Amino acid sequence: MATAEQIKALIRSHLSNNSEQFISIALQVAAHEARQGHTGLAHDIRKIVDKAKSKQAVIIKFPNELSGLVLTEEPKIPLKALILNEDLKERIGRIILEFRQKNKLKSYGLINRRKILISGEPGTGKTMTAKVLASVLGQPLHTVQMDRLVTKYMGETSAKLRQIFDRMNDIPGVYLFDEFDSIGGERSLDNDVGEMRRVLTAFLQFIENDVSDNLIIAATNSPRLLDRALFRRFDDVLHYDLPGAEERSHLIANLLGTFCNKCFPLSKAAETASGLSHAEIDRACRDAMKSTVLSNMSYVTLNSLAKYLKERHTAYQFREV
Image (cartoon, rainbow, N blue to C red; front, side, top):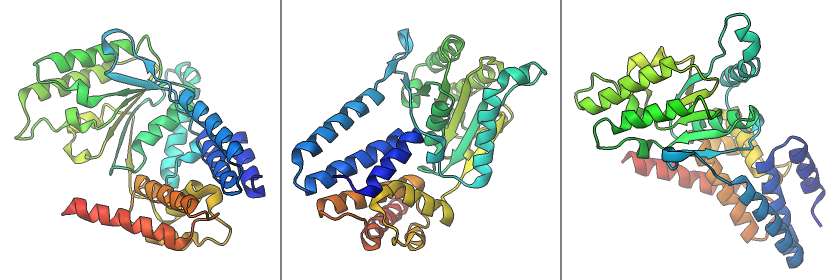
């Protein structure tokens, strides 16, 4: 049967409504049972988990002509899954509080902050933040597919943008414009084209005139490319950096879960992970867990995790060449 630590971890994740961690631990239990020779039970657990995951991944189609341009989902990710520094946690908490109390603010002639610009390196938690906000606020997440939004035909991109903002009045939720710099580039750049300047001007008008109750999030990896006129259209601007030592320790502990025993040197692992993004650390931890399962071991070792963290470092060096 499952170990005592796994049972306690399952209960904790269930009571905290952390479905992602619950599923991860359930799969660990399945792997444990398989190692004990209980293949039937392991198969049944995996089958239950696969069924639950398929329900979570159901995509709600955006109506009419915008179907395929806006991807809608209903994420279930708790706030504590977001590993950020205290300043960012406080500011995100403020967004949540104001959204929940927006009617109270309106009664005093005030408006909750709901137009948010998030910048930072790839893999630092920008998209995760949008998913967590949607989950915590009980709202669907509508992600605008920027690669499909921008077309070569004059006027078509602006027309699609207008349709999206028109729909916001009828379809509530958190709207995410990811890789926003594809349309939000500085209008004075020499390599800019007239059509994209018109698209950006249209977006500035749409976001300024938007009076819906929706949370609008624009995320970018390159804030320096953004037009300066954009910043005053947003109620808040959040900048994400690579995780610090304490954040890396918390992230590794959360990801490894019951694969991390009490003697695991988190501080040393966090030191090895220095310079990596949240997403890169996530990948390294999952690789280490897979290696542990396939080696019929119960816990991830520091050497194993360090190996995969160094692989992620090598990948970064390759991209910089």
